[in-house]
Amino acid sequence: MSQAWRHILAGAVALQALCLAVPALAGGADGERLLPGVYPEAPVPLGDAGLREPYDPFFDVDWSVALRGSYSRASSGERFDTRLAPKISLEHVGTRAAVRLDADAEVTRPNSDGQISVTGLRLGLEAGYDLDRDTRLVGSGDFTVSQGVAGTPGIASNVASPARSVSGGGELGVTRRFGKLNIGLTGGLARTVYGPTMLDSGALVDNWRQNYTAYDAELRVGYQITPILEVFAVAGLGRDVFDNAPLAGPRLDATNTSLRGGVTGRWNSGLEATASTGLGLRRFDAAGLEEVTSQLYDAQIIYAPDATWRFGAGFATTLAPTGPDRAGAARISHAANASLDYKVNSWLALRAGLDWNTARFAGSPDTETGHGWRVGADYKVNAHTAVTADYDYAYAESSRNGVQDAHRVTMGVTVSR
Image 1 (cartoon, rainbow, N blue to C red):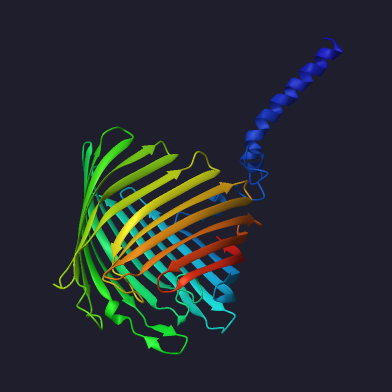
Image 2: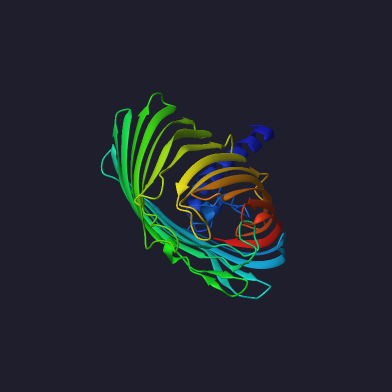
């Protein structure tokens, strides 16, 4: 045997011995580092899989805390606000049931007087349970506290502290499929309470007479005409009962009825659109108040061609009570919005948005209109920390307060799980 063949045979024996030894080493404590995709690890996980708990909890927990400072220059003057915005969500998805709880808040401290106030608080619950393949129970609950900031467009110039709104309620429903036909029935109860409005003079304007309880029921019938398109009809019946009559005028208790028809389309997972139109009627118990009729429109579109782009837009008409600091018997409002999100890379995300609204009040000559736009960016410092920057503009015009506008710049940092 030549020397060359001896080297080849020795190399083959050594390679065979190494192949036999690797599985044994891989079974040891340090051997797992030799397995593909285990070592070395990426310094920052691309997704959130590496941030989850090493066990299987009943709820998946996600939370974040944002600290932001904003400077605004408005018709009412300049101001600087500091905001703290915590957020938490709990989610459980099982074989038959799915439950999600969300909570977020906003605490604002203006530099002008240093008075800390809760300008936003929301608690939400969504749950569903499959009784069988075609029947599902659904339920939801919501509790919201909101308060506008003095000096912003839409708030009267003589208001030092706007009225705080507290609302809460719940819905319970059932949906059933009959082949291409699906039927859903939902019932709900909600309560809305308003606090007083404080004027610059120190006087308080009581709004408790605008407090009301709402009872609502809705029936939705849909038919899947193609795998993509569904036509549907929605009939609603509601009742608003106020705590007391206003200081001047009759009680505003009313019965609401609505009927809408529309179509929904879903193209894969990248495009979803729905549009409907109908008629809404608000009939008051008091004989001296004329019923209010309004054409109802609702449209929504979501387009996400890939993981980097997402576009959304919507238009809606609402017929509801006027709320505090407003005249008239009912508010008929139209609102439109659009948003665009672009993920440049794993570190940088950009966003932009537009909105428009207008409202008239039945039984009053008052009118309101407004629009705004915003741009912003998020830059991830690491997997848990992001720096945010936003600029937005708001414009409002009303027959009571005239023209108001505001430019605002906001910067901050967000720490998340």
